[in-house]
Length: 75
Image 1: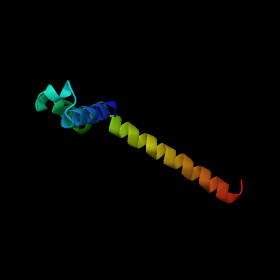
Image 2 (image 1 turned 180 degrees about the vertical axis):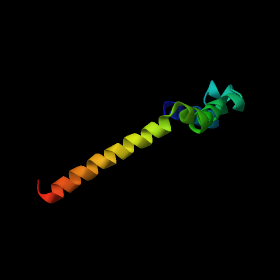
Image 3 (image 1 turned 90 degrees about the vertical axis):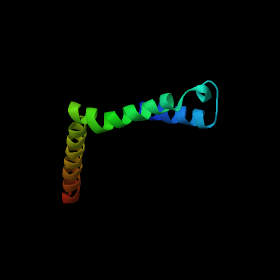
């Protein structure tokens, strides 16, 4: 997420023509977006972060569901 924030800030600096970013080529301004696209499309899947995140969310949902059932039973 940090790279996304940095990419947006650089883009805004380029559009608003703030030095020194205003002098940069658009190629250099758009590189962080290309890196982000590559990261989200390929690297996160290769590393397995998407599966781990999904498993973590499912485990939390199961815990919350069990807690809700226990609470509704009066324990």
